[in-house]
Length: 369
Length: 239
Image (cartoon, rainbow over all chains, first blue to last red; front, side):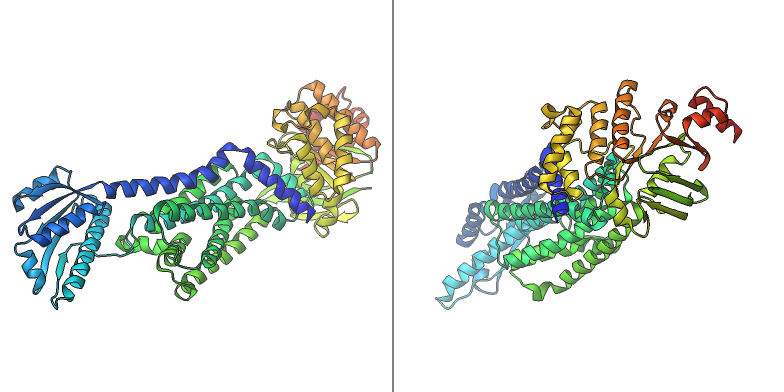
């Protein structure tokens, strides 16, 4: 035990003395959360929209005002005719157009009024998000009105027509906080671990350790324990930033989330060890984990691009990426507040991944060094 | 006799790096492995320290079979690798404490060893400095002293003086003599022929085989050479 502790103390010293490592460990998560967060929220908050109102009645005015006062939209133009729609989009100023057909208030009270939401699909991510926001506001408006007119025995109906599907989870912060988490934990647990082990190989100190009475398993545990601790600290920072700065909910069990994070870290750590057994120096380790782990985690796990819209082949490839299974877990626990009963398939798959990679990397570690 | 090998061989695919070498080393001896780059010295050393498993043959170190009882062997040997063996981003003291800890020394033992070592090397004023900031010669001397911290029976040195200037090399060998006098057995690989003169016995390796094994004096007599360099050239030509 004393041997092991001496080794771990050394590992912490390496980390604390290397400014670059420290920056990646602590600067990166904060920078990423803030960057992703503010880039997304700013876009939404400053989105310019156009309104084409053929009714110009009490209800369309009220709905327009509700949209404008939501904080997400700013009505840039009031259009007079359909002909003005195209030029407005072309100018690039307008991200979304809201079209009210004639007799809106009348129809809403009878068999339903229509409202058209047209997004600028040249920027599909923004368009989807904006349409979802507008949709939510329209629905909210309808609910308020229905409740108010319900007392009078009447009804109030609005049919929002959009080309994009409604996804109630589609809110900026809700998407990127879990995404950043999958990325950061992969970065710290897998990339940093593979680099630090590769460094010992490159410097020649690994030989000295292997000649010493330390067992290979002790060396691996000694190298990974500090990163496990730091990964956990990072996970906490990301979740806290999400909640405090961006208003993410935390509806599920924190304990469950911590447990799932730990499981995901084990997968990432064993991947890191596996890479380090293959890479002979730090550079190779960095490229292998960067291209082999971080890129797929970012591009294929559904963090930036929705997996549903990917070609089938990429969806299959995405299935073998741990982040694809961890991402829904984080979203499920934080946003939906679900428990293990809804997440056990994901959990078992992650567990199997951890087991397979751990066995593989331990076997490789003995053979290769 | 603290090291003995019997037809020890290592093959990498079709290439035979070490070809059935058999030799014995006595306690307190400075045993040199000489040869050109790629002659198999380092491979032989790596097998004896347990870093490589041999393709065939036997070896015992400090009385234990290297592959059947590796834990017993590991506790009794020290090792200084071809590359630098200490951590450059740790201070001198921290490096000493780390390796003392890895070899299971108590903190009291580590403390007295640290003082003893700093005295010997005259490094008391530098104790809190990062090892990376030291000149190469000091680093090598420090690495050797750290390799001795757990009082091993045998120390393996893989080209310990490569890249070091002749004066420092000479000082380094003073440390090796001191260790040998206290009963430590040293096995050194080198490609500096003048260093061969400092060894008690030398094995000359060519293409994985031991071509000659004797004291420097006897080798010079046998090959009618004025120095080790000439012995080596005659040997290499002959094979």
